[in-house]
Length: 354
Image (cartoon, rainbow, N blue to C red; front, side, top):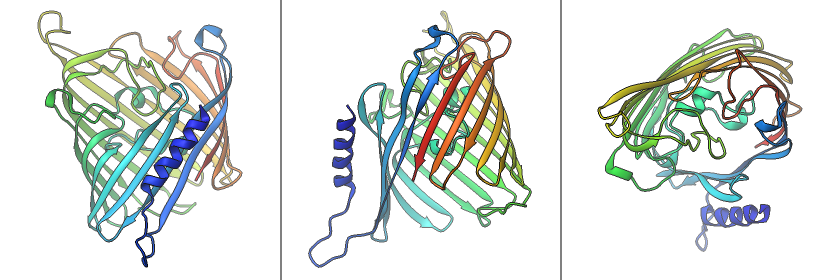
């Protein structure tokens, strides 16, 4: 099990590391990883088993090949399926200082929280709406970059729209884009008042794509495997705002997907449905080491009842690479269980991210 993960990782590293020709120095290589372990308990045993968990295990390799390409390769161990998978495989071509092209398997530019590295998340999992609506990792081509000293960031791309699947089922494509503006730029100081706003837009025409019902049948990493598929067109978008000052942070994001279902799912004729939701999060980090945060997380799936939760968390950062987190969720208005939330669910996570 775990042995296969490490063996597969060594093989991946061996394939990714450039081999220097005789008399040549090998290009520099950066190696990193993410490990998240902990425990889960539930108020109701029907919500899932209690016990210790391996939440995440990743190894990544990145570097440059000459003056043409940068590369980024990441493998991930899936504890639910007991399998090693390719998580990212990217070849990047820097065009100008403000723009680069990426080709391969990676996250499209869409959403604020969906675009965050998992190790940087405040809570154990992303919000319900981000998990269900954001497209997750895809195979495709994207142009992205920044301008005005990092104040403006942007990206747009075309993808197969089938997740990690290499083939393009049905010869349909997905488009995704995002623009984000930050009042300070790349570097901000403790006493800076920073306002950041972003918006994302995507479109796809699908023969069998996940309907945003938030029902997860596998490990909910990025875009989960969802039980209900649909055929038709969908437009999905998001808007987000974050305000930070002296350790205080207020963040909100709204996401929506509008579906035009093909006749097969539309009851004889084409029909429309939607999924939407978002979160509002407020927190304070003292001395950069102790953080308390509270989040409202609401989601109206395309199928099923509205789900609303309050989530409370506390994080301790003993060093630059380490984190310990506690999280407790409570349901509002008798909400049914969500993919990664249930009433009375408590979690603990210990994380190393380098």
